[in-house]
Image (cartoon, protein in one colour):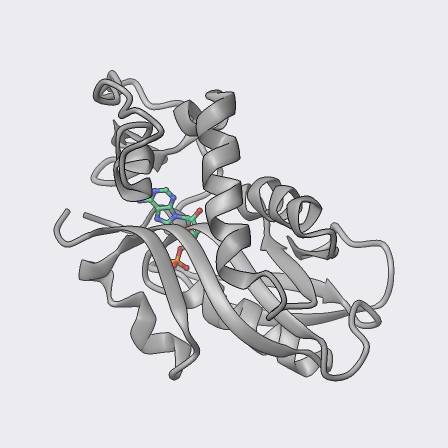
Length: 203
Ligand code: AMP
């Protein structure tokens, strides 16, 4: 399987989605709650990529709340700020920040943030991309939790960690909903703690 972050712009897939399985009850382990609300979209954004779509999880209010509360309970008292990576990390990250009553900092694609920024360039499978954070987003020593939906090759999360550290904060952990273990993204994160709600071993 190829990494979806490598391709842009994103056309609609003409291949029908693989429907999510029947939703697990909220009393099930959180990994099952998540797994049963993800669906595979083959050949999106390009042929050969299986896109892990978590919009079924987002549209299920009680499940979304369970996921947000699960993440929040892991970091209550140990982080000062949530950092969400554009795009889906912005959605989840803001919800977790609200739940914890702490601040939220967006990491966005180049050219989107209005103030002075720090930038980090990282490699995609074909070419490269740039993400940015406001230079004054953190006071020194703030403990940040970095959030995204999927950890694939790890380039995006690595660049986000470097950005946050260059802006004066420390990375307490990286939290993702889904880790594609076979793409070895953790190896790029240089020992920073990583937690995935669900880990997939093969494509
Ligand atoms: P990477 O830098 O390779 O770890 O890619 C991570 C970013 O690309 C995340 O922001 C994901 O949203 C997105 N991404 C990569 N692969 C996939 C995939 N198979 N399904 C959904 N999103 C993906």
